[in-house]
Image (cartoon, rainbow, N blue to C red; front, side, top):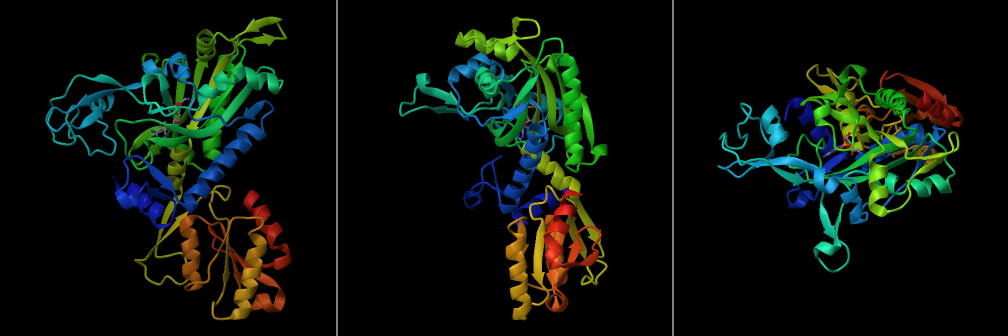
Length: 454
Ligand code: GAP
């Protein structure tokens, strides 16, 4: 792991963003717990996504479907047969890898192969033939563990949008084009994991299935690709670190006519953040065939029954969070605060957009041993926390408290000092400019609200 990644992994753990799952037992590979700040940041990303792609759209609705679906879903969707990666095993050390990663020399999290086709674990070159390994996690419904009761943890959220297509369309009286969106946990038993949270076995997908008239699919594909890319930029990612990757026809997923990934330049190379796929009418037709239920749509324009085409924009919440942490991480040598005297000292700041930052406002009394400052600061904190995610801190010098907040990306800090008691004003400090201005307590909530939206 390179230094850039190490810095983020360390900050994420130290400051309560991301921990290894079940760490007291040594952790579990590719499973992560999101601590208080990680959970809050993820929630902010999801809220921003829902606001942009559901609330602000004319024709998008949100669902929250069960993670375990009828097993027949995965047969019809093609996942039982096709949702596989080619698995190979090193005959010398028995380490297992994805054959396609072996071919191009990518061994995410498992050391670096010196050359292609070389085991990164022991260096040998003798492997078993690739065999298809299905990535879906199996479980059983009910108390009997047999094949008749086998069920799967969903590897994508999309299928519920197809199986519920008719129910949603009729109950909400939707007309084409319209979309069904969902954010939810998905599970993949990845062969090769690593690069921190990038390739996890449990993660959240935010995606939409946008149903359109056949023939209008290519136009809508371009529309969603632009919207998706814009979302990443608006979340704060550097546009120079984003690019599109058009999947060659021969490597498209079994359901796709066209897929374009949006990639981010991670420290370990350009890798997928999200993408847009043209799933055509594949899924609805498959489910119609397998369930025997009519999944057509009566098109009022033509008076004909049609099976809509589907454009699917998708993204991984944890991958976006990882990209945002990497992209916003700043180290300022020589210090930003007045208390940092040594030129060797480094201060870390997360330059997160206010909308995404887990804490919006920190509130401090200038001195903790002055009860009148502490009680005023607590009073202001109690009021502000009704409106914003706030943290109260009275420990250590004020400069150090500012730095602790900079490190987690808090955009604003309010300090209560002696002038507060006399004039009813506080200092409001801006994370990026470090400027402090005096604001009347009566104006504070409105001023912060306005700045958060700016
Ligand atoms: N319904 C389409 C679909 O699932 P995908 O590209 O396989 O498409 C969607 O997955 C998104 O989920 C990806 O763009 C990626 O951001 C994220 N993702 C996929 N596998 C992941 C993993 N193992 N860990 C974390 N995120 C993952």
